[in-house]
Length: 151
Image (cartoon, rainbow, N blue to C red; front, side, top):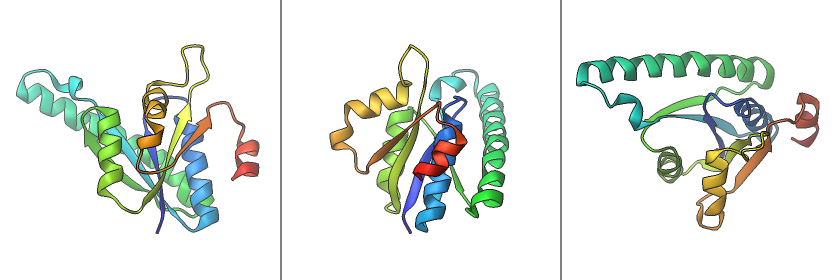
């Protein structure tokens, strides 16, 4: 089964990327893999404190994931799979794609502010020709109705 991989983070544009991935998967008979990455700098503390912070980050990720997963199950009949990795975001995204041959498309949300589309879109688009899968970049300000019409 071909999977659409989408990155779960705290950005506003993440919502549209999630919606797009779920709608495309539902319409094409695919699946959704949600990847969340815990950056290494979050745990540069004493070992005990770092372990507690790591566990708290995982709990936040699971809670955030469940919001999206419930919508995907209820509205799109898609049961997404969560993967949590620790490390540098771009390196972890590429590693996950290489490790899971069912991932067929990476879906990213593009920010709408003047700073640009966001760090992941910027970094990954620079090397788009060498990526192992196609990348779909979903504008962060698309309406639900527009997303439905294009998926």
